[in-house]
Structures are given as structure tokens and as C-alpha cells.
Length: 240
Ligand code: PGA
Image 1 (cartoon, rainbow, N blue to C red):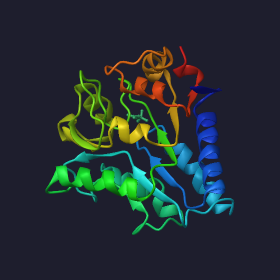
Image 2 (cartoon, rainbow, N blue to C red):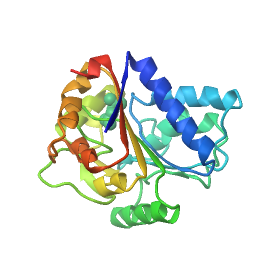
Image 3 (cartoon, rainbow, N blue to C red):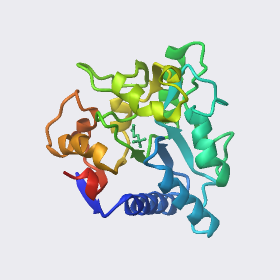
């Protein structure tokens, strides 16, 4: 795993945006895997700036988001559908109808939705660059610590730790959905290239485990140690 050590969150966000922009420059019709959460917000802002300066275009870019709460409607401000449009897609020239893919948090048949999503990624030719955040508990997407991890896109229960961490976005912890749809560990590992962003003290423990080189299902990010093109972009606080 390559490690890019950054001073702070701003630098993490700059480096990440530059890597995404470089991917779009070498392959304008690339397939990006995208995360939500607080960490990538500034990376998205930097990409919007680059777009506004005419340095990059998302016209042909295809995106697949990592996960979505379940059940949740897309116009709920806490849905990742809403977040991605409000934070990023509404400000760039991506084809939102055709090229943006987000798991449907309102699907009647979740198994079918997960199958459809996995197939759509394959049909698009697989993910060229997957951008990841890391949970305080080491989750990637909503692949939570457990005795067994799922390979493919699936429905999952959120852990108490994640419900607590994400309750900061909701009025009440009771409002946090208890389940989510998420791409699986193999869906993520099939990506040609992966970058993982970590910023702040709260991530230090998970990052330390990731960098130990040991693999444990109790910290799903450690599975990235079997991939041959992963770059960790980390700031001083997240590096113990
Ligand atoms: P955060 O979430 O960026 O909001 O800390 C990261 C994650 O849970 O993957």
C-alpha cells in the first residue's frame, strides 16, 4: 500500500482531488466509485473548482456510489442520493440521468436491486478508480466489522458504532436507518485502483490496524491489503 502523508484535512482533500482529476484526464469516460460522509466533502469541492476553471469535464464520466441507507427516500436530506447531488453532481456537467448510479434506498426487492447494481458495475467495465473513506470502526462502504464479510452488493444491518457516528447528521439517533445497501468487499476489491482517505484522530485506530498489514474481518478496511494498487491519503492526526 502506498501512503501519502499530509499535514491536514485540506491537503488530504487536495491530493485526492488531483488523483481523481488525473484519472479523468487519462480516461475521460472512466468509471468512478464514490463515497459519502464528511471526509470527501472538500475533495468534491476541489473537483467542482477544477471543473469551473475548465480543467476537467465529467461529461462522459460514470459513477457508482458505495452505499445507501435502507429504507430511505431519495428526497430525504439524509439519503446519500440527496447528499451526492447537493454536494457534487448538481455543480458539474455529469449526465445525472444516464451516468450516475446510486443504490435505490426505496427498492421493493432489495435482493434484486443488489443484483442489478453489481451487474451494472460489470456492464460499465468495472470501476477504474474507487475512492473510499474509512469508518472509525474500519468499515468501508457499509461493510461493518463482523465474523463474516459479504463479497457482493448486499443489504446489511448498521452497527451501533456507525449509528452513533452518523447520528450527528440526524435530529435524533432514533431517526438513523438501521439498515443499508452496500457494495461488498469483492465489489470494492475488483476496482482497478483504490484511494482511501483518512483525516482526524477518530480514525487513528482504524488506520493503524489497516497499516499493520494483518487482515481481519473485524476491521474490513484491512482487506485492502490484498489489493495491489491502493493509496492511503492520511493526515497527521489520523496517523498514530
Ligand atoms: P466520515 O465517514 O467521512 O463521515 O468520517 C467515513 C465512513 O464512515 O466511511
